[in-house]
Length: 173
Image (cartoon, rainbow, N blue to C red; front, side, top):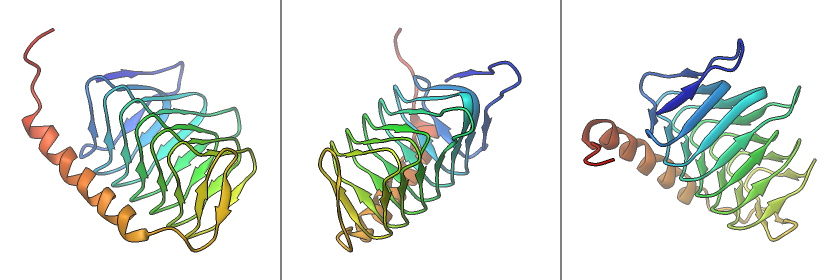
């Protein structure tokens, strides 16, 4: 894995987290217990802090960044899909941001909410707990998220991370 300090900003990665060797972690990034960071993901905490909770998956080619004085926070038991962009936003516990989605500055995705694939959650948008945000820009559909899908996705990636910690091996350059 490629992990960089940036000045006095040093990543803190829980010993039970799995960070794929092709992921990049820079600066003020904290990754919680049993979380997984997959190939091509970039977590760049150069201007501010990035916090990833426990049992959260950050999937392939996702980019997480932050602005000065505006952290990016992803809670516990979250599923962050492939090719997602998170920028100075908050993703509450047990939420999902699906593949290709973008969540921008000061937006909040509530507990148990889902941002649908390829949706864009604009600056300062609040996605209430249990809501579905769909489209570009996202339209909020209250009470439409299916929390069982988030729960199952989070559990699958915790188990996948455990297997990758023991079974992944590079066989060529």
